[in-house]
Amino acid sequence: MLFDVAITSYRRPAMVNDAVVSCLNQGQLLNKVIVVDDASEDNTAKVIHSINDPRIVFLQRTENGGIAAARRDAFGLSDADWTVSLDSDHELLPGAIEGLAKLCESAPRAVDILGARYKWDTGGVTPVNVPEGIVGYRERIILSGQQDNIGTDYLCAVSKRLRQSVQWEPLRGSLPDSLFQLDAAKSGRAIFTPAILGLQKSDGAHGWTRGSAEQRWARRRQDAPDSVKALKLILIRHATALQDWGALNLANLYTKGAFYALLSGQRSQARKWLLDGLKVKASLALLGLTVCSALPQQALRRIYLLRG
Image (tube, rainbow, N blue to C red; front, top):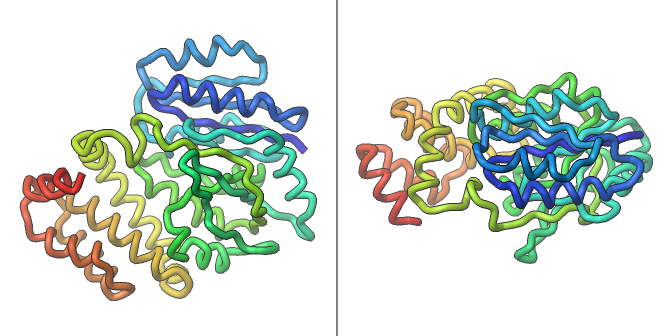
């Protein structure tokens, strides 16, 4: 049993260096470390090449396509039994891959997803809780719909079979990640360990929640059209299951989708998703966004910047 680690990075040369080194120290079960740089236009390539380890495979994208497109490229370069997905602000703790291998061996039946927990450098742990035993589509959606687990990261390894059958949609933003996780949950069984096998840093530049409000607004404007497409795919493939088993997560997805629809000028779509979200689970975010949906985009921008 061998593991590849697929790392995606954008303008974080020092962090991705630490991530790669943490993987190279994992021992004999490591096959290779795949690093895909999403057209950073900095010294990331120089930093990775300076590590000088034959187990590293480096790909530098010529155009920035977002994290999902970079993950798609990284998974395409993997040929091991399992592929661990890491962001550049993640690290594997010592013995992490061995821990994932033992988790796989402990499964009473074949599984396609191995999950573990991250410890944040700020002290928190995600996910807050994990299920026991082998879980399928229904249990995964219930897990993702728990208040403390909505939108949280977990350390994930996927099997070769799943990697070849479930594809990352090459779309921008965070919603393609939700789409991949739901598609993977529907296609394969998972097993989780409560063990903490990874570290997540909170101060990475160019992250989804990092940088100035102006920078985050600009990223969301850029990601908006693809995010709308991603939510449409989520609803086509998973709306019924989310409605039945993960209402909180579905309401959260409607909130994000409506926001992106507003940013991309699709106001009728935004209003429909806001109404659908309120029918699932009313929240202050949905109600506030419903009020804002009547405002011109410049006013929406001012409100977003004021919130910081």
